[in-house]
Each structure stands twice: as C-alpha cells, then as structure tokens.
Image (cartoon, rainbow, N blue to C red):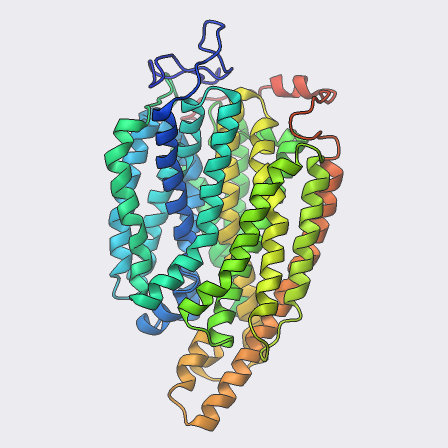
Length: 543
C-alpha cells in the first residue's frame, strides 16, 4: 500500500496536496499569506491550551486534595490520567483525522474539550474529577496530532514551514512552563476549579475561527482504523501505569500481575504493527538511528521534567510555606531561563553540531539536578529555583531540535507518522515521569516518616493533619513530614542526574555525524535501501 500524499481536493491555497514542496506540476508552492499565519495563531493557541492542561494542577493539587479529600493514589490519578489517555489516543486520533478530516476532528475535539473542562472545574468528588480528566485526555488527543499536520498543509515553503513549526513548539513548551504559573495565580484569586476553565474560551475561539482560517485535509482511500491495535495499545499502557503506581506502596502479587499483563499486551501490539499494511505506529522508522535517538532523548527529558516540576511546586507551597501567588512569582525566573534556552538553541545549532549542543545542554541540566540534591527544609526558595532554571535552560537544545531531527530524519512520506510519535513520546514522557518518579517519591516519603493515616501517605495529608493537632504536636509532625518529603526530592534529583548524564553521552555518540542546521550531509550507507524496505503486509482487518 502506497502512502497517502494528497488531499481530497484543493485546499485553502488553491492547489492539491503534495509532500515535496511543489504544487504538483513541478513549480514552487506560493508562500503562505495572512490567512495561513492567522490560522497558525489558532493552532498555537490549541497547542498552548492542551499543554497547559497537563501542568495546571501542579499548584492546585494540594488545595483540591484538601477540599475533595483525595488520597495519595487518587492525587496521582488526577495528575496522570489526562496525560496517559492523551498519549494513548494520539496515534489513533491521528489516523481518524486522516479519514474523516483533520479540521473536522479538530472542531469536534474542541467542543468536547470545553465541555470536559467545565465538568472538571465543578467536580464534587475525586472520582468524578478523575473521570473528567480522563475525558479531557481523550478530547486533547483529537486536537494535538491535527495541529502539526495542518501546519504542513498550510505552509508549503520549507523556510516558512520551519518557522511555523518553531512558533508552534513555543506554544507547546510555553504551555508546559506557564501551566503552574497560571494555575497558581488563578488559585490565589479564585478556587481550584478555575484552573480548568482556561480551556473554555480557547475552545470557543477555535470553533468560531477554525472553519474560516484552517484548511481541510482528508487522505483519499485510507484504510479503516484497526480496532484491535487501538485496544492492544490501551491494554498495554493503562495496566503498566496502574502496576507501577501500586508497586510503589503495595509490592504485592496483584500489581506485579497487572504490570506483567500490560507488558504482554505491549508485545502483542508491537507484533501486530509489524504485520499490518497500515499500522497505527510504523515501527520501521526506528531503523533510522537519528530518529530513534532523538525520540528516546526527548522521552527521557520530558519524563524527568514532569516529575521534577511536581516535586518543586509542592516544595514551594508545603515546605517553603509560600502562597500560590508567591510560588507562581518565584517560578518566573525559571520560566525565563526555559524560554531563553528555546530561543537560543536554533541559532546556536547553525554553527554547532546538534550532538554537541544537545549533550552540552543536558550537562547544564545535570548541574541543575545536582543543585536540587542540596535543597533542605530550612532554606529559602532561591536554591531550588536556581536548580530548576538550570534544568530548563539546559534542556532547550534537545526540546527545540528534537522535532526537527525526528521529522527530518525520515522519508517525507513517513513524516506524519514520525510527528505523531514525537507528540506521543512527549505527552507519555510527562505522564510516565509523574507516575514513576512520583510513586518513587511517595515510597521514599512513607519510608522516612512514622505517622498514621493521611499524614503517613503524603505531605499534603500531613499538613492537613497538623492543622488539627495542638501546636507542639502539629509542629513536630510538620517538621518530620517536610524532612521526609525533601529527602525524597533529593534522592529523586540525584537519580535523575545519573540517568540524564548517561543520556547525554549516548546522544553525543549516536548523533555525532549530524551536521549543523543548514549544512549538507553525506547519506549514511544503506539508508536508502532501508527506507525502501517494506514488510509483508496483511489486511488491517486481519484477526
């Protein structure tokens, strides 16, 4: 089966779809005009909205936990379920958009996202909040893959397209950085549910402007979605997440069995993708060393970033004793360092090889993690914010260049599948980091404190419990709980530094042959032959 590289008719530029930068007649595509750039602004707003919703709860979590009475496990589910369902459905929704139309799917997703945001804002219990967050994740999955694909349709000129993708990435990463800040400011003036209502005006704006500014794209002759692959992907992701979380505080036979079942489903999913003519994930892309290395590096960095942000926001409020507004203001310098890294990286990459630039940036992030190992309970926020700023600044080269490396290192006809996997790895990395390292932090906290009930489960529970005790007993409980939480932060930061240092060395070796941006490269031996290989295919409905 040949890849689908054209639309179902003329798009907004007045030409049929093409993936080679021409109009299909050998001439150069006209450059994008005001309509396309205005459409890009709408797509960036979507990316910002989806990304913010992953992190907006970081500062709200202690408040909603106290208000709703959420347990430590429920807190993790409230944080995790959005990102996991978002990442789990990205590939599926990307394929669905090709079949029913990417703009149409985008508008349907926007309506669902707005409705689920309202449901989350007014959820009366932890269970209903988890359910609303799950619906937000599924709705977000309809939005994310369509945005990058539509940028490729709207911007045919290579220089304009690279600039548009860069602007889009600022929206994606800016949302991740702004989420805690915006959430903290809202919580300081309103209630915790107000953090969810951010998505409502953005969804309404998309529903109004999307039909006017965005072109439609639908691949003709695309095969139907393989429902067995969808089911296997969810059967792999969700049990693994549950097993990892439960093993952190209950290392019994049930979590091990659930985890094993998830891994088995993952093996079946991979096997099925290798046999399908039109798979959800094209595993042949991993034969390209640059693709696999960039994707793996992006996954590692986002995995660490999500968990570290959760630890630091809770430390600012529950250990440092800052209000949500003060915590948000203290986070601004780290946010500035993060954005500076994003802006400088493409400029430096014109003269410095990506391998050296990315590895050097990760070395800076390792230094930031080592700074966090020195954070205590009797210090101000300065040391913590310094470490956080170094982590964000150092990760700039990898975050900025990863999309270009992933999409640019594969044949053009596979760029859509590569972009979908790039988004999936980012969303999955953030959520998986919170689940894995968050569970590790919970385990370390419980191993270092001897307190009954909620105080022995989480720092938020200890703070709430201390408020009901006489002054001497309450202060003693708070001191013990803050010390246990900080020790967990120190340990997680040190382990993360070791892993990130190893990743920096691996990237430096694996990407050593990639030249600076804009420089010519010599093709690697066997690359063209590998790109042309196609496995024996079976129909998508084979059982």
